[in-house]
Image 1 (cartoon, rainbow, N blue to C red):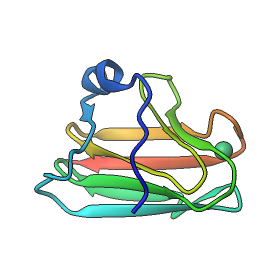
Image 2 (image 1 turned 180 degrees about the horizontal axis):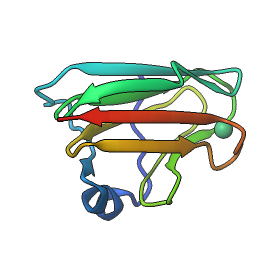
Image 3 (image 1 turned 30 degrees about the horizontal axis):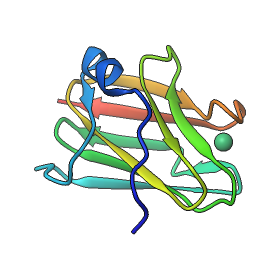
Length: 109
Ligand SMILES: [Cu+2]
């Protein structure tokens, strides 16, 4: 599978209550495919401890960047990245390179 590519998000994730998953997540895994510059599904509803993985199938780089810029996952072409939800809330995110790309993560307790 594609390798993860995280860019300086560790502190930001901790601040938001999300951390980078190392493959040891105890919860469910939710896969979001990025294709034709859109997130599919655009909205995911997860629980604390669940892993959210983006799989960039496009030939250009994309990001998953939370609206307040507190965290960001950067994925080159064909790459994937993931986070683990650690606190509840609604998190709107976009692609920093293509701000018309919009997604939402709802984390339930
Ligand atoms: Cu993009």
